[in-house]
Length: 102
Image (cartoon, rainbow, N blue to C red):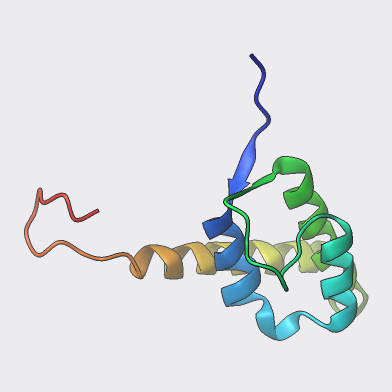
């Protein structure tokens, strides 16, 4: 059985909704929707690797004219890490070591 790699909706939310929202122009939202990432609709539980790659490419394309393609990828990578950190720090924390609050 072959399964395609997926990116979970919480990863999409951390990057596109929490970190990139201020940079999402109407044109970029349309580009994202065209590649399978509709941020106007409720997020799906998971997205294919192909949709993830194309969505990242759409963001880089939208920003590379003002900062260059390489810099746009670097900026996007930083935003992805910051979004993941913010998502992780938002998890409920246990008050005692070894507790199953995670």
